[in-house]
Image 1 (cartoon, rainbow, N blue to C red):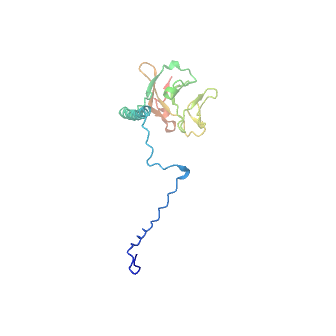
Image 2: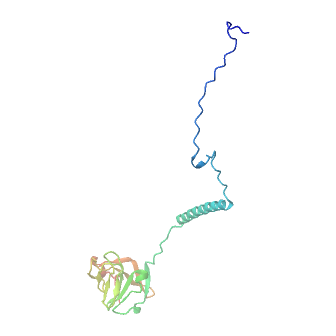
Length: 204
Protein backbone atom coordinates (compact mmCIF):
# COMPACT_ATOMS: atom_id res chain seq x y z
CA UNK A 1 0.00 0.00 0.00
CA UNK A 2 1.44 3.32 -0.97
CA UNK A 3 1.81 6.08 1.45
CA UNK A 4 -0.12 9.06 0.31
CA UNK A 5 1.94 11.36 2.51
CA UNK A 6 5.16 10.68 0.65
CA UNK A 7 5.87 12.51 -2.44
CA UNK A 8 5.51 10.62 -5.58
CA UNK A 9 8.77 9.46 -7.05
CA UNK A 10 7.31 9.10 -10.58
CA UNK A 11 9.36 11.18 -13.12
CA UNK A 12 7.69 14.04 -14.93
CA UNK A 13 7.30 13.65 -18.70
CA UNK A 14 10.07 15.36 -20.75
CA UNK A 15 9.38 18.76 -22.29
CA UNK A 16 8.47 18.78 -25.95
CA UNK A 17 11.18 20.00 -28.43
CA UNK A 18 10.55 23.42 -30.02
CA UNK A 19 8.82 23.20 -33.33
CA UNK A 20 10.83 24.61 -36.32
CA UNK A 21 8.62 25.99 -39.13
CA UNK A 22 9.09 24.16 -42.36
CA UNK A 23 10.60 26.07 -45.29
CA UNK A 24 8.04 27.11 -47.87
CA UNK A 25 7.97 24.90 -50.88
CA UNK A 26 9.45 26.40 -54.10
CA UNK A 27 6.86 26.90 -56.80
CA UNK A 28 7.14 24.51 -59.67
CA UNK A 29 8.31 26.09 -62.96
CA UNK A 30 5.60 27.03 -65.40
CA UNK A 31 4.59 24.38 -67.80
CA UNK A 32 6.00 21.73 -65.60
CA UNK A 33 9.48 22.05 -67.15
CA UNK A 34 12.39 21.36 -64.93
CA UNK A 35 15.29 23.88 -64.98
CA UNK A 36 18.42 22.67 -66.69
CA UNK A 37 21.46 22.56 -64.54
CA UNK A 38 23.88 23.33 -67.48
CA UNK A 39 23.74 24.85 -71.01
CA UNK A 40 23.40 22.50 -73.93
CA UNK A 41 26.81 21.55 -75.36
CA UNK A 42 27.82 23.13 -78.74
CA UNK A 43 27.78 20.57 -81.48
CA UNK A 44 31.20 19.99 -83.07
CA UNK A 45 31.98 21.69 -86.46
CA UNK A 46 31.48 19.42 -89.39
CA UNK A 47 34.22 18.64 -91.88
CA UNK A 48 32.43 20.58 -94.62
CA UNK A 49 32.05 23.66 -92.41
CA UNK A 50 35.73 23.56 -91.46
CA UNK A 51 36.81 23.34 -95.08
CA UNK A 52 34.49 26.25 -95.96
CA UNK A 53 36.07 28.46 -93.31
CA UNK A 54 39.57 27.55 -94.49
CA UNK A 55 38.60 28.27 -98.10
CA UNK A 56 37.25 31.73 -97.27
CA UNK A 57 40.36 32.56 -95.26
CA UNK A 58 42.72 31.51 -98.07
CA UNK A 59 40.68 33.40 -100.66
CA UNK A 60 40.85 36.58 -98.58
CA UNK A 61 44.57 36.15 -98.05
CA UNK A 62 45.20 35.57 -101.76
CA UNK A 63 43.14 38.65 -102.71
CA UNK A 64 45.09 40.81 -100.29
CA UNK A 65 48.41 39.52 -101.66
CA UNK A 66 47.23 40.13 -105.23
CA UNK A 67 46.20 43.70 -104.45
CA UNK A 68 49.56 44.34 -102.85
CA UNK A 69 51.40 42.93 -105.87
CA UNK A 70 49.38 45.11 -108.26
CA UNK A 71 50.05 48.22 -106.20
CA UNK A 72 53.77 47.42 -106.15
CA UNK A 73 53.82 46.91 -109.92
CA UNK A 74 52.02 50.22 -110.50
CA UNK A 75 54.61 51.91 -108.31
CA UNK A 76 57.55 50.35 -110.13
CA UNK A 77 56.07 50.90 -113.60
CA UNK A 78 54.15 54.21 -113.63
CA UNK A 79 51.77 55.09 -116.43
CA UNK A 80 53.41 56.62 -119.46
CA UNK A 81 51.43 58.75 -121.87
CA UNK A 82 52.50 58.12 -125.44
CA UNK A 83 51.76 61.33 -127.34
CA UNK A 84 51.92 61.62 -131.09
CA UNK A 85 55.14 63.09 -132.50
CA UNK A 86 55.33 66.84 -132.37
CA UNK A 87 56.72 67.03 -135.90
CA UNK A 88 55.46 64.98 -138.82
CA UNK A 89 55.53 64.94 -142.60
CA UNK A 90 52.19 65.61 -144.28
CA UNK A 91 53.15 64.68 -147.84
CA UNK A 92 54.12 66.72 -150.88
CA UNK A 93 52.54 70.07 -151.78
CA UNK A 94 51.06 68.52 -154.89
CA UNK A 95 48.99 66.21 -152.64
CA UNK A 96 46.81 69.17 -151.61
CA UNK A 97 44.36 70.83 -153.95
CA UNK A 98 44.04 74.60 -154.14
CA UNK A 99 40.97 75.90 -152.30
CA UNK A 100 40.58 72.84 -150.04
CA UNK A 101 40.81 72.15 -146.32
CA UNK A 102 42.40 68.77 -145.54
CA UNK A 103 41.31 67.31 -142.20
CA UNK A 104 42.97 63.90 -142.49
CA UNK A 105 45.46 64.90 -139.76
CA UNK A 106 42.87 66.24 -137.33
CA UNK A 107 42.36 63.08 -135.29
CA UNK A 108 45.97 61.94 -135.12
CA UNK A 109 47.78 65.29 -134.87
CA UNK A 110 45.15 67.98 -134.31
CA UNK A 111 46.00 69.85 -137.52
CA UNK A 112 44.06 71.23 -140.49
CA UNK A 113 46.08 71.73 -143.68
CA UNK A 114 44.69 74.52 -145.86
CA UNK A 115 45.87 75.34 -149.38
CA UNK A 116 45.05 78.58 -151.13
CA UNK A 117 46.33 80.11 -154.34
CA UNK A 118 49.10 81.82 -152.34
CA UNK A 119 50.33 78.73 -150.51
CA UNK A 120 49.76 76.29 -147.64
CA UNK A 121 49.34 76.77 -143.90
CA UNK A 122 48.62 74.44 -140.96
CA UNK A 123 45.91 75.48 -138.53
CA UNK A 124 45.89 74.24 -134.94
CA UNK A 125 42.64 72.30 -134.43
CA UNK A 126 41.94 73.83 -131.03
CA UNK A 127 39.20 76.40 -130.47
CA UNK A 128 40.54 79.56 -128.83
CA UNK A 129 37.51 79.72 -126.54
CA UNK A 130 37.78 76.66 -124.27
CA UNK A 131 39.97 74.27 -126.25
CA UNK A 132 37.41 72.12 -128.03
CA UNK A 133 38.17 70.63 -131.44
CA UNK A 134 36.39 72.47 -134.25
CA UNK A 135 35.10 70.76 -137.39
CA UNK A 136 35.43 71.86 -140.98
CA UNK A 137 32.02 72.28 -142.60
CA UNK A 138 32.58 72.20 -146.34
CA UNK A 139 28.99 73.11 -147.20
CA UNK A 140 29.16 76.24 -145.02
CA UNK A 141 32.79 77.02 -145.86
CA UNK A 142 33.81 77.51 -142.23
CA UNK A 143 35.26 75.92 -139.12
CA UNK A 144 32.62 75.38 -136.44
CA UNK A 145 33.22 74.55 -132.79
CA UNK A 146 30.69 71.94 -131.55
CA UNK A 147 30.94 73.05 -127.92
CA UNK A 148 29.82 76.67 -127.89
CA UNK A 149 29.26 77.58 -131.51
CA UNK A 150 32.35 79.59 -132.34
CA UNK A 151 32.87 80.02 -136.07
CA UNK A 152 36.06 80.64 -138.06
CA UNK A 153 36.70 81.47 -141.69
CA UNK A 154 38.87 79.26 -143.86
CA UNK A 155 41.80 81.47 -142.92
CA UNK A 156 41.20 80.74 -139.21
CA UNK A 157 39.87 84.21 -138.40
CA UNK A 158 37.04 84.11 -135.86
CA UNK A 159 33.77 85.83 -136.73
CA UNK A 160 31.00 84.32 -134.59
CA UNK A 161 30.53 82.84 -131.15
CA UNK A 162 32.53 83.37 -127.97
CA UNK A 163 36.00 82.61 -129.41
CA UNK A 164 38.12 85.69 -128.55
CA UNK A 165 40.78 85.29 -131.24
CA UNK A 166 41.62 83.39 -134.45
CA UNK A 167 42.95 79.86 -134.61
CA UNK A 168 46.71 79.52 -134.32
CA UNK A 169 49.02 78.26 -137.04
CA UNK A 170 51.81 75.72 -136.68
CA UNK A 171 55.27 75.99 -138.16
CA UNK A 172 55.26 74.61 -141.71
CA UNK A 173 58.36 74.15 -143.89
CA UNK A 174 59.68 71.84 -146.60
CA UNK A 175 61.82 68.92 -145.48
CA UNK A 176 64.96 67.86 -147.37
CA UNK A 177 63.01 65.28 -149.34
CA UNK A 178 60.52 67.90 -150.53
CA UNK A 179 57.68 66.86 -148.23
CA UNK A 180 55.75 69.26 -146.03
CA UNK A 181 57.04 69.21 -142.45
CA UNK A 182 54.65 70.47 -139.77
CA UNK A 183 56.24 71.29 -136.42
CA UNK A 184 53.79 71.55 -133.50
CA UNK A 185 56.39 72.81 -131.06
CA UNK A 186 56.10 76.26 -132.64
CA UNK A 187 52.82 78.11 -133.11
CA UNK A 188 51.97 81.54 -134.47
CA UNK A 189 49.17 83.84 -133.22
CA UNK A 190 47.41 86.27 -135.51
CA UNK A 191 46.85 88.94 -132.85
CA UNK A 192 50.58 89.08 -132.21
CA UNK A 193 51.35 89.67 -135.86
CA UNK A 194 53.10 86.30 -136.14
CA UNK A 195 51.27 85.07 -139.25
CA UNK A 196 53.69 87.08 -141.33
CA UNK A 197 56.56 84.84 -140.19
CA UNK A 198 58.13 82.87 -143.09
CA UNK A 199 57.50 79.62 -141.17
CA UNK A 200 53.79 80.33 -140.59
CA UNK A 201 52.99 80.03 -144.29
CA UNK A 202 54.47 77.87 -147.01
CA UNK A 203 54.47 79.62 -150.36
CA UNK A 204 53.32 77.56 -153.31
